[in-house]
Image 1 (tube, rainbow, N blue to C red):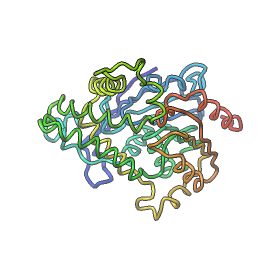
Image 2: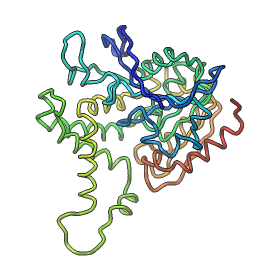
Image 3: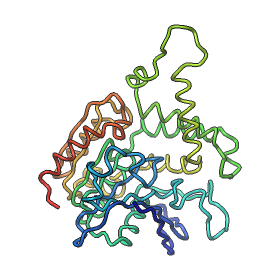
Amino acid sequence: MSYNTYKYNKKFQLESGSYLPELEIAYTTYGKLNKDKSNAVWICHAFTANSDPTEWWHGMVGKGLTFDPEQYFIVCANILGSHYGTTGPLSTNPETGKAYYRDFPFITVRDLVNAHQVLADYLEINKIHILTGGSVGGHQAIEWAIMQPERVENLFLIATNARFSPWGIAFSTSQRMAIEADPTFYEDRPDGGQKGLEAARSIALISYRNAIAYNKTQAEKSDEVSKDFRADSYQRYQGKKLRTRFNAYSYYILSKVLDGHNVGRNRGSIENALAKITARTLIIGIDSDILFLPEEQEKMAKYIPKTQLHIIKSDFGHDGFLLEFDQISEIIKDFLKVTVL
């Protein structure tokens, strides 16, 4: 495993028309690029994850697993605006000498992908054998496959969609409202908005799971009256857990990245955009996902050429893309049996 930071010393143009004076990209690699540079696997991470997929996708990446570093050169780059090393709200703006905080410019999924492309060029990866991502990672993967279809050979999209839904935006907005209700968010300090961030995470968790998952895992063990319910303590624990590893400013800006996801923007329609994808495509949905509905994966499969669609069964809702690695691995292995490196 190799953890690195690439510094791009030119202005980085954003889709909004704004720009970043410079760009740093934190990334992790596993394995080695072979002689003909044909074994690259690029993993796009989700909302609050980092560039090391073995930490958050441990059942998928590693020796003997689906994405084996002995077979592949695996790259995962921390996304623009995040907390884990790539330029974000806590980074210093070289033009002011101060951290961006709430002045960090509005960014989109296409900006995230453009940053990936900068890094891929630096790493001399002209062909990506497998490009994959779940959730927001899927947003990046599908955009990349549209923007540079000639670069992507196989595309794996898991629990994602072609346009973020009004239902999803409602969840994002509620989370931002929680952060906005914390007055320290406006003080522009590294720990600003932490209580709001805890509440935002609690709201998000409800969309990541579902009633079945909560009723199974957070049910009370007795019928006695209690002031400390398991579901209550679970929500609070998860909020505090995120607070210790993330910041409210990155969370706030990245929630807007989700909301703006729309592959059809300036491309005529979603259908026209999806038709541009030339990669062999595998789409995996989760039957109990209430945030990225299976019907959204079905729509993508309808318009992307050369596509296989699988809807897996899981009680874990959207989080199934992180937890159901046995099912996902089998589907991917079957798909790759007809693909030769």
